Length: 148
Image (cartoon, rainbow, N blue to C red; front, side, top):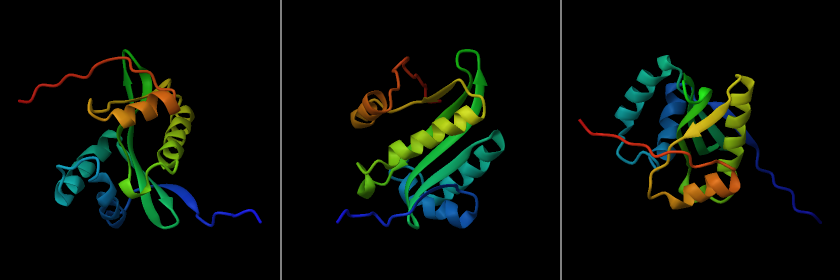
């Protein structure tokens, strides 16, 4: 007998305050300095600029999140920028990040984007291997910042 998974997967936008609050436990694994109140405030400030937050659900549990925005600039032209991509630590290595990135790639194509771009912290070597080896992303630049 061949085992059949009964898990139902879906990717949905996070829209309601209740959904946003439910997503915080996963997002906080990436953005560890955020409080729930700061998360609510920052997402509310980002949404008018085009920020969208998508959740991958396994059954009714949020297991992965992608915070994205369609942007235009001189070097990438029209592209989708991934601000946040995280899979819950308890659910990693199950293909959820890959599923969510494939969704983002289709989202970008549907909007006429030429690229999908993201930044990743220097210490996140496992994530870098995932992006380059599994998802065929290229490392094309360094990111610089100055705290004011």
